[in-house]
Length: 270
Ligand code: TA6
Image (tube, rainbow, N blue to C red; front, side):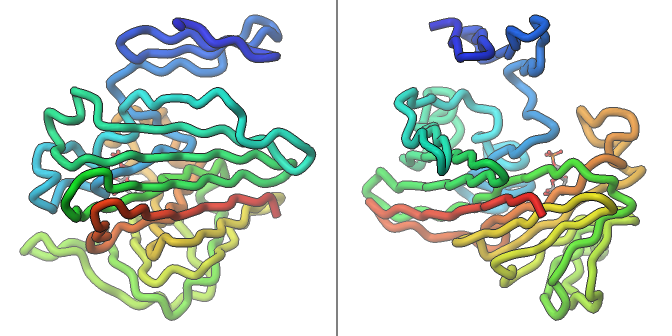
């Protein structure tokens, strides 16, 4: 079906993957996605590699893998639709285009559950093949916030990889977080290990709690003025977001044949 109609909107989908979402209200286009480029915002899903490929299985893959650029299947039977929430399920299996660059048989399941003040995203990775494999996965969550005024806690005492400080051998620096409250006033690209189950992201007049389960790392990213070099970043865009990204972003998760890895993010309005 090239279009999908909901109560208040229609989504047109081109066979090559592009899509546009149009509200009936004002016939306003609220989203347009061309097929090749990942979306700069929202919650892109990173799998099976975080950053540039480091694992031999990922050698033909782009930065952050293929899941954020692939067309997922939407399961239109709503999983839940009641006072507590509304949930929808999406799946990704190796399409020909993926199989050409990645040999491991897998199934990804992504469940999005919307409650009144909470958004829950569950990611399941199933190994559908006969051998174990290793991967990384992450939810690259962009939070709309004034980046110079954001504070994130508690991360004090956690060790983190500071990807903005790279040694002559190309290795990022490992540090211990000394701050009670972390900010992103200068370019920040930090991968915290043993992430706390919950962090609070606050700014004057707003805040979001990011809870996670099954994701051992938390990446905090904002490039500040260096964002001018980032593809698809709007002018000054770096002033309006902070990325807080629960993930499995250090080392690799080993998944046995037939097993499923499950991890969850819960965003709540503070
Ligand atoms: O999650 C942080 C990060 O890996 C940064 O290193 C930065 O490059 C960012 O993601 C954006 O990556 P992208 O591929 O979306 O440009």
